[in-house]
Image (cartoon, rainbow, N blue to C red; front, side):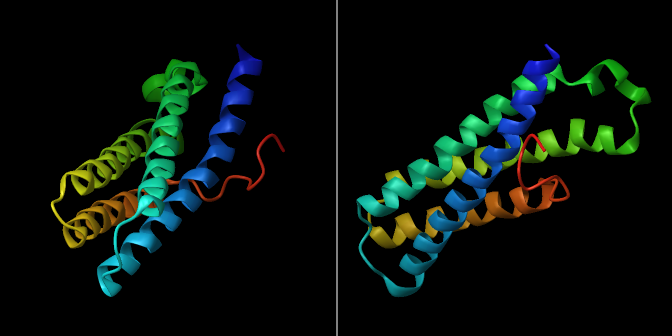
Length: 145
């Protein structure tokens, strides 16, 4: 169990870079579309897919980690940073996944390219704010070190 926890924690750390880079890529593409009115193509769909799939994968790994973390056993007696990770990080990241999924789903349903870009941009920006705020940036850039 301890080896699984260490592996998943490192994988979760590594996967955050896929989320951050995929989110930045998707956000730049839709921002470009909002301001230049280029056509929505398969490139934007692909970026949306990368972003949302990486977010969903990160959420699943996080949920498993949540169940394995020793902080759960410590419960209320956990130090403040532990409680922040257990409550604020988890809640905010769930909201980020919801925002990213909303951006993709609502953009897909828009009638024109302008609507797709506006919807995706709005919700990807909300997801980005949540991600930037709740990511523990002080962790090692390279997992398992």
